[in-house]
Length: 354
Image 1 (tube, rainbow, N blue to C red):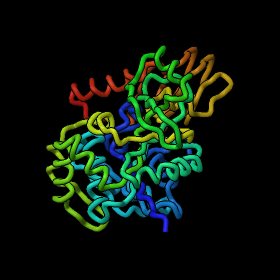
Image 2: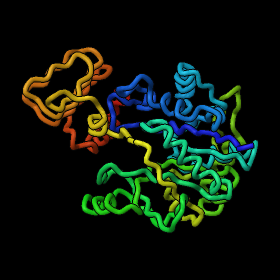
Image 3: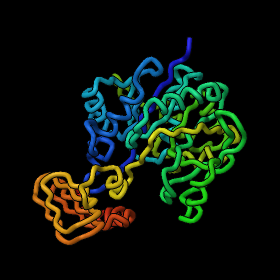
Image 4: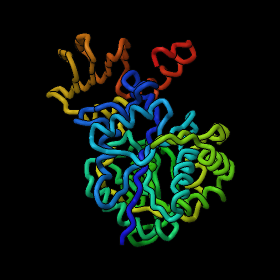
């Protein structure tokens, strides 16, 4: 019988580039960004059916009840919610979930998916996962190389070599400049790295122990010392001792056991307001408007409000967001400015706005 795959919904991100919609109490994965469901709900619904077991959710401890409630709204019951006592980046979280899976079955297959991304071709996602199954069962970590839709400079890229459905990972390139990215888009050996991967729990854990021993030790100790109540697994304090490091840097860029499957799945990160504008329905002047918004002699802008009326008059390529008593005005082409604004508010002690 074909082994079912455990989907892991990685829901620990803060989504600061979508502030003030995305906030500490309710980051972007818990919002509906133009669709019927929130991002985490859509992610969960992509991995239901005979191919998959019930999902595992990795989230901040403060979001466990919210994650459970949102999944219940769409009829999904997670087998476990792994709660982080504090964020430590993707490496400790990934290793912790592998340690959790290996407790019950070291041969368990797990696929890590970010809960705040969009995927428009679910059938293609399932096909890519199935393509990588045999390699993962043989002990490889299988990444999904996402087909670029343009020369994005905000994503990492994977260079693949060799032939076959699962090619060897030859190189990771992090956020290239525009000219380099244009070359990557024209080269079929390059794909976007969306941070999604498939592995056998025990094999992944062995690789992490060898390449990132401090991360592995802290993550495994955190799972061993976790407080467990029903479906909630609250990682132990040892998790706080883990180095705060991305899984790519800690493991994927070092291992020779990584493979990549081409995945043309209609993926989008929705990482900033410009990306949301790109994905949104727009009027004849290229404006994406949500709520009580009036646009006059304005083009290429995004505006959304949760109540107060907003009027755009004679502006181009701006973002105006009114959310829970906060007003953001920025340029569409300045995504890093929003994160800088969040940092500035932290420095002023305005955590009430975050």
